[in-house]
Amino acid sequence: MIVAVTGCAGFIGSNLVDRLLDFGYVVTGIDNFSTGQKRFLSQALLNPRFKLIEIDLLNLDGLKVALKDCEIVFHLAANADVRFGTDHPHKDLEQNTIATFNVLEAIRSNGIKKIVFSSTGSVYGESPVIPTPEDGPFPIQTSLYGASKAACEGLISAYCEGFGIQSWIFRFVSILGERYTHGHIFDFYQKLKNNPSYLPVLGNGKQRKSYLYIQDCIDAIMLAIQKSGEKVNIFNLGVSDYVEVNDSISWICQELAVSPRLDYSGGDRGWIGDNPFIFLDTNKIQSLGWKPKLGIREGVIKTVEYLRANEWVFVSRR
Amino acid sequence: MIVAVTGCAGFIGSNLVDRLLDFGYVVTGIDNFSTGQKRFLSQALLNPRFKLIEIDLLNLDGLKVALKDCEIVFHLAANADVRFGTDHPHKDLEQNTIATFNVLEAIRSNGIKKIVFSSTGSVYGESPVIPTPEDGPFPIQTSLYGASKAACEGLISAYCEGFGIQSWIFRFVSILGERYTHGHIFDFYQKLKNNPSYLPVLGNGKQRKSYLYIQDCIDAIMLAIQKSGEKVNIFNLGVSDYVEVNDSISWICQELAVSPRLDYSGGDRGWIGDNPFIFLDTNKIQSLGWKPKLGIREGVIKTVEYLRANEWVFVSRR
Image 1 (cartoon, each protein chain N blue to C red):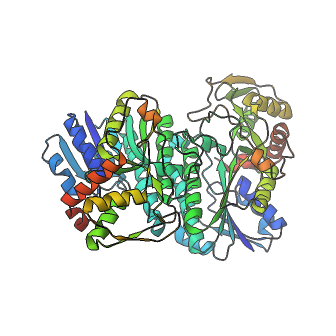
Image 2 (image 1 turned 90 degrees about the horizontal axis):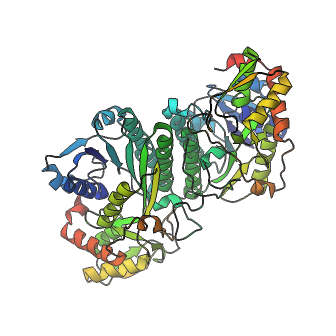
Image 3 (image 1 turned 45 degrees about the vertical axis):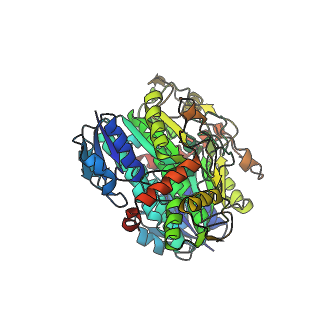
């Protein structure tokens, strides 16, 4: 069976590719390398069952050819930049909404019947219900990123209804672990490396967020695909607790053995559209028998360890 | 104050233009006449306070110029074709999602701070909660039309959060009345005109739907804009009951004095993505003091009367 992974050179995508290859699948990896890293695919590229196709998802004709003979598409490619959405609103529209439309069109034209999609807890906006379940109140979007991912979910569900496709949609909290190259630990690490005695923090540091370790995330995805057979299968993925940004900072500092002066920008949000409290109800995925193996603190420490061993990621990004 | 109406030559748009002109506003009407009718604007075009700009919303540069000096944009332009969405999936993406993105970009670049948007009860998919309130469960989209309108809502809300814009989003049931040129009464009327003794009906005729008369709809919009001042204001618009398609058929036949043989295609849905039961909770808009003046039966009869007096609409459409 050939499976395709879009965004195969990204943080989550490349870890998923490695897992799928371990499982014995033939994998077509698709990436435009706008943010992906070829080094993340170094193992995969040595595997005869992996084929890399360098293509942009906005190229629909090319995509249709690339997905030929695939049976399932893991669509992970995205603009994952939540914070700077308002600087370039077209980016979320193009790289998330329109790119997902193209993936669906390519799936349809190839007669593919299964799609797996990486969505986000950001689709809930600032939910009045916390922890937020999958069927929580109709959300009001607060970020262009969340809005674009919600739009993708809607497109996928409508295609499932209209064209007999089956989907698995995963709403992630922030993911941590090996190949993490985007988010607050990345930013804090980079700043502390430049100046170990001073750390600017967006907001008041009391934003409450939840995190999940990458291998636990992939375990959950693989389990849900096996065990859940509805037309549209939607799962929150996260752990059963949350931490404050300040907790995260203290673990990072401890791990790096630094004691910076913390300089808060103030306010309960780090930026426009920042959600001060993200905590998802994960009972649905847990009811399938999944449990995360690592807690948030262990995930943060694993991430710091990864960054320390792979400082090249700071050179090649941004 | 200059107000703009996109889709100004459409069913709802042209009625809204007339109302806004009655109220004394200076109105910029925008339409690409893909489905709009210049005859709907015959009164407006004689009014010195009305300016028609013929432009496609996919032309962002032109749109930016067209919205110069406007203070509020009523964005009604859309592909309103629910039923044939799967025949041309790109249409909802382009004419709804991307067009709305362009309207928002033009609003932002002109420093406009208010947008009014015509959404739809279809954004609820097949809600498990009926009558469905505005904050009903996170919907799973079942039509490309609903998905695209939900995507528009998400974009609008995210722009409100990101750029300090205020929005009024109205989720309509089907609208009836003068200038109605799209939907089941239009189709039934046309078929009965061709053959008064035979009427094919999609589904089993037991689909339950709710309808609202156009002038009641516009009353509600104008009231909500005046009375509701949140950042994002979302209202269901409909009446407090629903009818079966069969009820509607009997009123139409009575009005036309015909007794056709009814030929049902069968099943509880008229087409893929057809929602067999649409009924919105309208307590929120009613709490502002609005009540519909016409019931569903009166709306259906008004619509048949309009079509009878304006059979030209059948010639110029489709």
